[in-house]
Length: 178
Image (cartoon, rainbow, N blue to C red):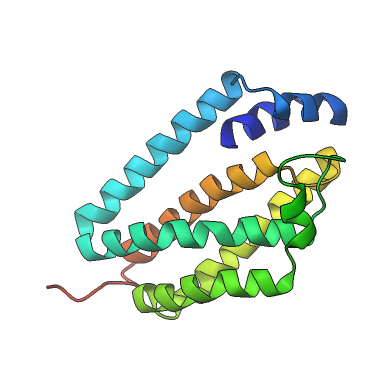
């Protein structure tokens, strides 16, 4: 998802060529760079997080995969699929507001335990990310592809980790020492 989206969206091609690149199973330079950058940033953010507060880092590890699904679900609810057929078409057809609400509940409760009231701000940042991704995809290819949702998952994880490290660094969030 991330590599295909980076290859397609950074190629500066027309709609048809962008959709072709998204279907291509090979990764280009942009895709490989995106994966390497994603991995390096995550390792750096994790090391900062665990170095300063092990429990907060462990809690973020549990919460991050759940929270990363929120922008993906939001994009599917507010966007249309750019192709006539495809593996993700049904997800776009059947994802509406109730699914987004259900997707928000568990991360909101668990995140509230971890980040307290700051979880609302983190969810706001995630919502802005989802709206930006939907807008970019709509402008570029007329809808949000499945690969774009996969890329959104990875970007959402990075944004979440960055927010937790920022909150921890500014001492706005800290778990009690054990």
